[in-house]
Image (cartoon, rainbow, N blue to C red; front, side):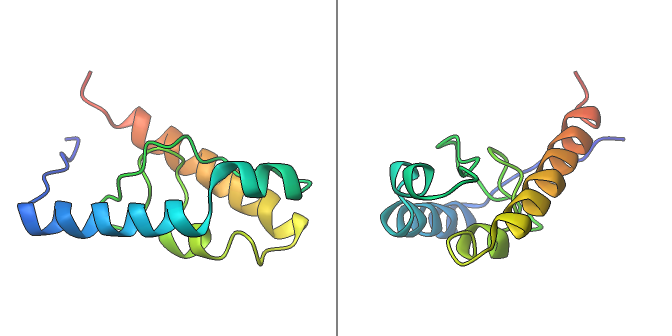
Length: 94
C-alpha cells in the first residue's frame, strides 16, 4: 500500500521556512553557472517525512551541503536522488 503524505499546518510552515531559506542561500542560477555539475533543483521544494525533497529527490543534508560537495560527491548525490524519485514514483497509487 502506498503511503500518502499529509502535512499539518505547523509542518507545512516549517517546510516553507526551510524552502525560503534554501532559496535565499542557494539560488539555482548561482550553482548552475559556477559548478561543473549543475544542481537538480526544480523549484518544487516540499520535504517528506524523511526530509527528502519531493521535487528533486535530494535529502535535506544533500541540499544544504551541495555547494561544498566535490563534483564526484555531487554525481553520487544525483544518482541517489534519481533512485529516490524512481522509488517514490513507483509507489504512487495512480
